[in-house]
Amino acid sequence: MATDHKLEIFRGALKFKSNTQKIWGVLILLTIVTVIEVILGIIKPEILMGHIFGMKALNWIFIILTIVKAYYITWDFMHMRDETPGLRRAVVWTAIFLIAYLVFILLQEGGYVFSVYDEGYIKRDF
Image (tube, rainbow, N blue to C red; front, side, top):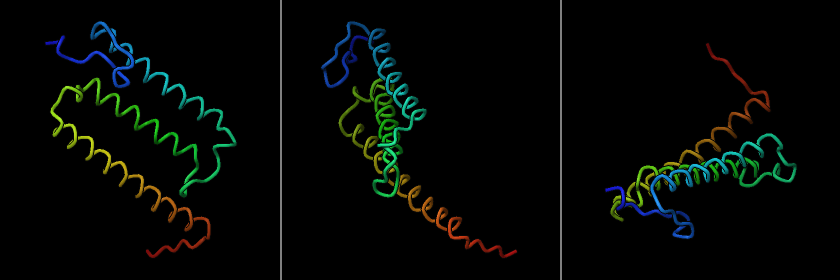
């Protein structure tokens, strides 16, 4: 039933009276995060252009905010919060390892491609 779902976000800090209110609350949260991403993408503050772990701090912020949005979409809209702990762990840990692996591959391959183009060692063997 619809009343069986938990009607709060932020670990109970913000509670809603109905599923409709909760949907709007999560939508507003996701909209705020997206607006922050867009504003940072347009402004590109100089303080966030320094490199951390081989990538600009601004890019790390984009990755983290995207993970936050994915978490809330999965947790609230896909009702992961109402599932058994074993299923939640299986889904969440799989996603965490996959995201970490993809970020690692992007950093490794992106750095290699950049160095090849930057140093001019392009060899074509046709």
